[in-house]
Image (cartoon, rainbow, N blue to C red; front, side):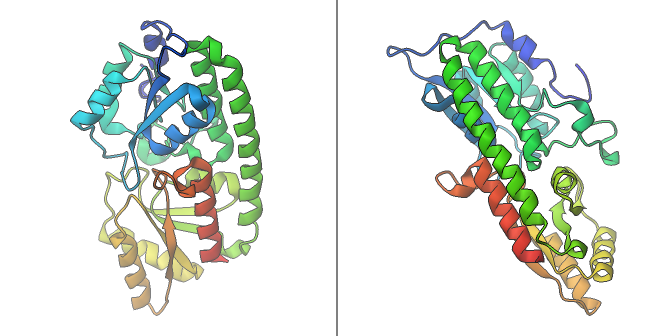
Length: 305
């Protein structure tokens, strides 16, 4: 197992479980379970009415620290295919996912992203930043993996999966262009994204923003008083207008930075709330991958422009 790609090779193990039967009128749809909800949305977009998708982690859940419940374990056992992000995002579920891969197809949707496109932050000591979905182009690799693996396990549905994936990829191409156009409307000196934890590195690289997170890549590490003071010094010096809180991280550390800046005579506002590690509630635009990205971009642009 390659330590830089946690759970790499699960797809190979999964093949030992054998191909799934294509759904017929006498059979239910393929039962798919995912970890975070925007992976569930992506699988649903590609799978269409041939799949039944359940996401374990919904709004407000932090996948870095999430531990599977008894109900989650049962859902995973009942699944015919499992998809997860990988790259240590679901750190505490790693052993469970390895166990599941011994008896059913289990795929990391990031598995086919070229290594030279992945970020290697110093704090991760040779591992990779898992937040690839904030670069829409990178997430397109996940879409292609889902299309390929669904087709592999349900050959009768391959044409439908291919058509669904093609339409979705075209939508993501347009989304990628739109994000770049929107970020370009922020004055260059204000293109600095300050958030609770360093989840937006891929976003910054892809769309031309400097990114500063109070915590590290994982929310397991907590920010200290020195981190708060250093970040306050940075935003006062740069005269940054706004910081942003996240749906899965307590707002208190960012509020502490705001108070530290105020003590220096500079008022920085909270520009809004961003979806970082999970999407919004089901049934809302923000509950989809595309809607999550659009919400974040609109919030960032409004806060900084």
